[in-house]
Image (tube, rainbow, N blue to C red; front, side, top):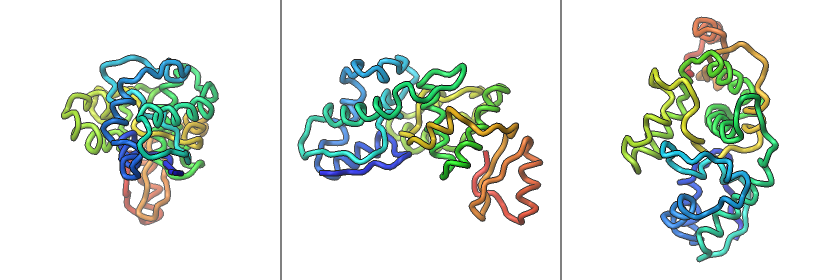
Length: 231
């Protein structure tokens, strides 16, 4: 059975799709991803062991089309994603001063914040610039991930480590918030060269950027639009 998993799917969404097609239960897939030993994959071995991380393999279930069969072992299903991630990510994406896991984490945010390659690179620049300036990251997507995928399962246990809106959150979250594709990974490793620190999506679905909030808002005002999302 061929199943497609798009860019931006979370581990929970992947597990739910597998269950819906009778491959394995959602619970067994999540358990395998959390507890089975996959450290023979070099990419997995690089993932830091941390009690602050909700889902160890979030970010590494590479989006693609896969062959599965009903009733397969959940660890085998997980392995298919990881083998592809090893081939598609490996050591291909790097950025000075960041680990591969940090690049994947940033890419996962970019995946959820922008919907085309050009804006992914511009959004990447905003977040890189904020990190360098030690600003609060303030990514709506991290707050949404907490509300939709973490709090319903774990309560507030991981909220502190993933929500990048509180004043203390002047860094990346503890791990990826979805499984990013090639465009987002490329953007994380190769951001646009801008000094922008703010962006928003207008009601016209156009992206607006600025070095200050005032600059960004002035561009939107000139186009007579209001923000749908603003970071």
